[in-house]
Length: 282
Image (cartoon, rainbow, N blue to C red; front, side):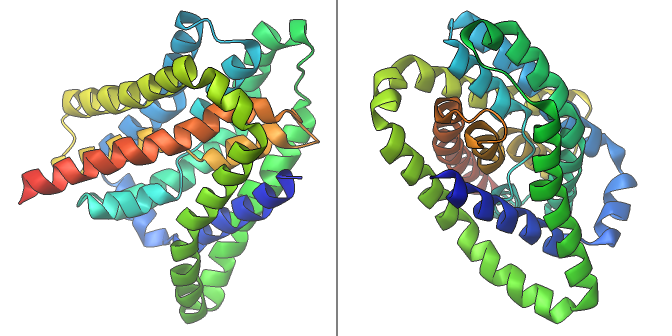
């Protein structure tokens, strides 16, 4: 089953996040709370709200409705740190935001997904065992991050070497994960690629536009604004896929399809964004 590929990949990604955390980075970021608050509001509140509006607007079937809300509820992806670096953003802010959103969403995902499932899922036999969701998130999200932090402070040199290896593996592993799910669900994906692909792309573009606008309104610095845009737009697709396909939670790979499409499109859109930023900085 593909789920047994998803779970180790997610665990490794979160362990690598823990390796890259520095307590001094948190101190620097908290001394300038504007960018931090902007990104968290955009990611935790705006993105799920936009996803809800798009799901209603496009009249998505329940499995895709729930899947779109799910990817919007997830924390920032670990690749956002690399993208922020490429865009000349604030890497310390990016790492801190990824860590904080990973912790905060441990509590927000069960609440929002319980509501979304009750809204459109129960009539078609889709239910959410909240207890199992919380247990899986604690085991696969929080525990690896804590172990990564412990390893970093117990063996800084060993953690640095491990981080370099895992950092290079993160994107290829995600591609493997997406490929496996595409092969297993290609008929459903191709049958719905039009409206669902458009909906997912609209979600990404809306996330970028809203986070950029909010950053400008709060007068966040240029360097931090680039990081906020990337952090809000880039979601942890591996976590969404793990929740959707887990036999202990939804056990429905079709719910993972919006996350698969989102992962593909977010990398394309944000690579274009990074290229545009780099060209304008020259």
